[in-house]
Image (cartoon, rainbow, N blue to C red; front, side, top):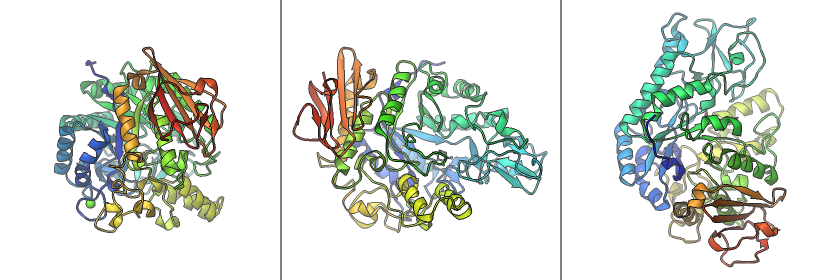
Length: 549
Ligand code: GLC
Ligand code: CA
C-alpha cells in the first residue's frame, strides 16, 4: 500500500445535489455550470471538499442513482467539458471533488443490463442477479427498500432479476469477477481525471447474504454485510483506492460500531469512513421509516457516545445531520419555527462539528433551510415516497392519506431537494425559469444573500465552526466523554487532547436547562449562540457554548 496522508481527518465536506443547487442555463434545473458559479461562495464558507451527488447519465427514476453510463455526464446537468472545468476551477481554489459511486446497481437502461436481459446465454447474463420463479412466484420474499418485492419478472426469459431499490435499478452481481473488473476500471478512469475520492452508495449491499439469493421462497432477511463484503472492499482497495491520495466514505443504513471497525479501520485496508444511520433513524417507526416518533435526546446521545468512543483511535467517524435522503437538520433535530430557527440551527451545528470525525454540510444547512410544506402527494418527486404512498395508503390502507402526508412532510426526501435559496428574488435566485421542484416559500427571508455578510447569521456561524476546526487540534484529535447522559434537554461532552479540554454544552430544548457541575463551561469561549455570557449553571433556550481550557 502506498504511503498516504490522512487529510480526510481535517477536512470539512460540503454536499451538493446538483439538480437543486444552481441553474446556470435557465432551464429550471441545477447544473454543473451552476456549481462552478458558486465556488467562491463555498470558498468563503471555508469548506475543503465537495461531495457531488451523481451527475452521470441516468434514467431519471431516482435522482441520478439509476446510472445508464458511468463515463458520461447527464445532459441535463451539462457536458464532460463542464465537469472538467468544474474540477479545474475547484482545484484552483484548493477545493477537492468527491464523486458518488453507485455500483450496487445500474439503471435497467445501462447497456450491460440490456445485454444481460437479452437471453439466458448472453455473455452479460451473469452481470446481474437472475433467478427462476419459485412455485410460479418471486424466488423468495426479499423486499425492495422502495416498497414491494425486490424481484421483478422479465417476460423475455421467464426469470426474475433482483432490484433492492426501484424496478429500474437492477442489482449488479459482485460475485462475478468481470463485474468487479469493470467497476475498478471505471474508478481508475475517474481518478486519472483527477477526482479526489468517492462516496460509495449502499456499499454494504455489494456483498449479499446467500439466503437472499436463493430461489427457495425463503423469508425476507438481512440484505447487506454478506460474507464476501469485506473481501470485495479489500480487493477494491488493493486494486484501486490504495493507488491514490483520496477520501472514501461508504454508505450503510445498518452498519454497527463493531462492523465499522472493519469498514473504516485506520489501517487503510478498506474505506476512510462510513455514513452510519443510527442517529438519523433513532426516532424511526417500528416497521417503516415513515411513522417516526419525536426525537429522543437521551437515545440520540447514547448513539453518538457509542460511535465516538467506539471508533476513537481505531477507525474514523463521519459527522452529519442531513443529506439528500434526510429531512432538513433544523426541522429534525432543532426547531424550525422562526422564533427558534436561527438559534437552534447554530446549536445543532456546533454540537456536531465539535465531535471527532469529518463533518458533512448538506447544501442549505448552512443557511438554516427548513423542511418543505409539501401540499399533497402529487407534488412529490421522490420515488421512495410515491411508492410508499401507493403501498401503505392505496393498496394496504394501513395509513390514512392525512397521516401519510404528515409522515412524508416530516421524513420525506423531497424536503432536502427543493432548490437552494440564494436570494429573496425570483425563484430564490436559483433559476430564471420555473424550477423542477418548488422553492420553499420561506426563501424571502431564508437565503444566502442576506446571510453571507451578516456576522450573526447561520452561515457566519458555520464559517466560524469550520475555521475553529483548522485552529484547534483538540477538535480533530480529542477523545470524547459524554456528560449528563440521562438528561432530556442537555447534550454536553468533553474532548481532550494534549493537555487541552474542549467543553461543549448544548440545550436541545426551548426551556432553560440546568447544567451539573462537570458540564458547566469555563476557560475561553470559542463559539456561542448568545451574545451575553449568561449564568454558568444554566443554559438558555437552544443555547450552545463551546469553551477551551
Ligand atoms: C442511497 C442514496 C439514495 C438512493 C439509494 C439507491 O441510499 O443515498 O438517494 O435512492 O441509495 O441508490
Ligand atoms: Ca440547468
